[in-house]
Length: 179
Image (cartoon, rainbow, N blue to C red; front, top):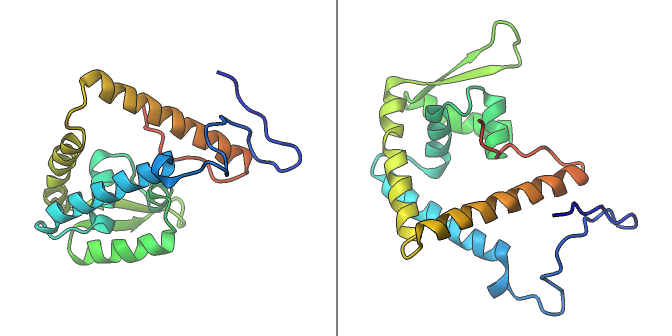
């Protein structure tokens, strides 16, 4: 596998040649299909978690905190690729519901530490089960090998997306799983 270099005239990365403007169709667009699947996934998960009083904007931060993937506002903002101001409003609602706490660092006043309360732990306990049930339903008919292949393909695309982002001077990808 070779790494493509940016086109010196346009700055665009040269990649595969599967798509062309003359033949482009959203029906065959990987991006369109991924977006469609993701929207259906979020809709189904939201429908199920609504019974527990959680919206997508609320369950995603709770879930990431529960997993230990983030513990500051800045990390959460990077992970969700959302503006810290928008997240602050969501955290205001979560804090008002008694689901999380925020505490400013004593070493660096710019850092805001986040933690789940006991109520937040209880509320977020439903998320893994709902995610697993929904993902398994969406993967109905796939073999284990096909599931693994799909994961490999998506990881490769995520890696390529990170290369494109780096080449364009954009922010670093924060969706890489922590080891």
